[in-house]
Image 1 (cartoon, rainbow, N blue to C red):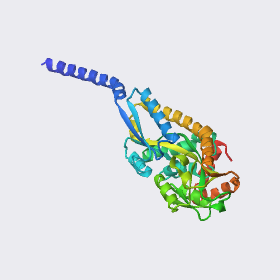
Image 2 (cartoon, helix red, strand yellow; image 1 turned 60 degrees about the horizontal axis):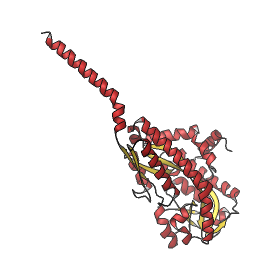
Image 3 (spheres, rainbow, N blue to C red; image 1 turned 90 degrees about the vertical axis):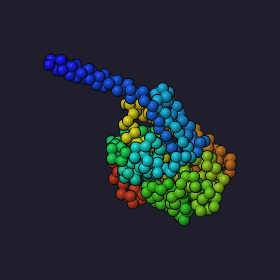
Length: 336
């Protein structure tokens, strides 16, 4: 009669100890798990971003002793950017190099970061990252839309218009069909600056220009040699109308499944690789590409009326009703 209670108590004691032991070992067991992120971007294998993403992957692999691996896919090998973002929202272990224009489809205000002359230097981009308003938008992307921004220290450079006629003022763009990505802020920005925006996938630009379906593109310098656009375009018009800030987005659900120390490694190495790549582009590669394009016969138009373009660009913010959001961030970072 006395044995059963003792046996039950003993079993309870053993079970309790086992549960406690498992609880103590859980973090270690989780850390021993292996995780893989398939990371997609639309740029070619010769772009500086691709090398930067490979560096990010290598460092994450080293710091986690191979238990968190990033496999990088260039040239949109995993699919269209918009489709990938939706897969990410569903919790897939996929990442995408994207921009605030596309993220603005989920959180409207963040699109201002892709507007005309919003940020004009790497230093301003760094200030924007500390803006309480921007931090709020990033949090909303994760909590309401399942899109975890790992970092946005990746600055691809200033975008210019590449055409077959010189462009110095907004009116010079009148009637020109310019390729843009399919996002409202991008479309309205190009329209406000004077051109007719036409949404087209990155990989479809060259044949569209070759067949004269498109009159030009607006890209950063480093996109031109990689896409051989110097073969079908004559002029580089230095409008500097958008400082292209890129976001590295992954699934918020997948990110939360990682051990905290892996989350930290993923973010820290993303920041580090982004800053290194951005400085390489802005301080060296842009100058090298510019000189190379001149050798290939392209004419660089430097005497652009930037004041006229900046004034014209304000209309994009007004049309999309995000002027207030822009002014709020400007106040927070001390920009007029």
